[in-house]
Every structure is written in structure tokens, then in C-alpha cells.
Length: 278
Image (cartoon, rainbow, N blue to C red; front, side, top):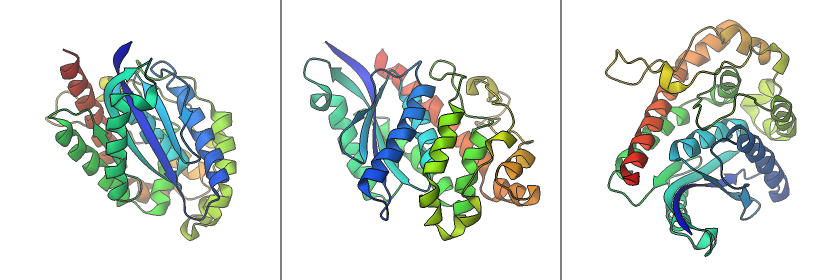
């Protein structure tokens, strides 16, 4: 039986890390993401190699949000990826399906653009528009300092970008904390992250779950409303630093812009998927 579904093709990379260690970290991170996205995930994650994995979803926006969360969970490990929307033939097998072909093409292109790049391929006329949004969003992240990229996770663990149709409100915080401990040798290799190797999970605020569609402010001509103030003190306690320091990084790291761009990408992916489903 052939059905049009979504593939997320992931490739992790960290030059100073043994492949077996990289595989273990990716496996743990993907396992966490897989649990959170259980409502929209189809099959269990599939390892193609030590550093490459496939995840299947019903919806493209789910795959994007899953990648975005995985990117934060894995940092400073770099994660290239592709999202493909196409036919999955259950009889021919996953890697023989058009969706896998689309995903492979997009991943090769993403890797050619540098580390941590995500591209989209549905073999559709609007793919270029979607990818321009993705590249603009990723440019914000690339311009962030190492500390700002590390702090993104502390914000996300309190107020995540969330869609009710794709994600569960029950997050495996013990497993997330265990992953952070496993990543400590990687943090130790990063000179600028020496003071950010551990997160105090007890200091975080309770997880705030609100569907992002409800948070987008309809009285504006652009996507906004997906960033909230009030988390600087908790983030500071989680990372054993000052609130003033966190305030600086939240502003200069353009956390609000990153989240609003991500929201715009969710809307664009939903729009394109609806067009392809007609």
C-alpha cells in the first residue's frame, strides 16, 4: 500500500567524538523526541548507520518541530537533516520509496551548505519558498553565540513550541537530564561552554503547554506572540549564572525572532501539505 507521509532524515556530526559515542547520544536524543511526538509519529526510529537516522510522521510540521527540539537537545553536536513529503510504499520498503529519495536529495544539499542545516523536499513548486524560510530561520541560530545556543534548551524546557496534534504534554525530563549528563564530555571539548556543562532541572518553571496556533497574535501582519518574558530568572538558576547575563543573551540571541520564524515555518508547512493533499 502506498501513502504520502513525512520522513525526517537526520545526520549527526561531531569531529572529536567516537562514532559509537555519537550513535549513543543520537539514539538517546531521538528516543526523547520520539516519545514527545508519539501522537504524530508512525514507526519506531530507524538507524541507517551510527550517525544517520530516519523518523516517519504523519505531518511535515511535526517533523520540523521534532528536528528543532532534537537540534537543541543534541547541541553542541551538529545535526544536519532533511524533511521529505512523499509516497511511502509499505511493500517496497522505506529506502525504496519516493519519500526516501526526496529526503536523500535534500540531505545531500543540506550537508553541502554546512553544519546544522535543514532542507525540505516534497518535489513541489513551493519547496523553494519553504526552504528560504528555513534558511532564514537557521541564519538566526547560526548568528547566536555558543552560550546562546546552549541556553535555548533551558527556555524550551519551560515554554516549548507545541502543537496539540503532534506532541504530548508529558515530557521525559529524567531522560533529558540523563542525556545532558552523557553530553558532558562534549561540553568539555567546547572552550566557551566550560561554565554551562550542567543544567539544574529542579530550578526550571513547570512546563507551559499552549498550542502555538493559539499563541500567534492575529492582530499583526506577521507571525508574532511565540516568545514570552518571565523566564530569565529560572534560566539563570538552571545554568548557575546571573539574570542580567541571561537577559543579555535572550535579547542579543534573538530568541523571540527564532521562535516566531519557527512558527511561520509550521504554518507554511501545514499550508503546503494541505495543498498537496487536495
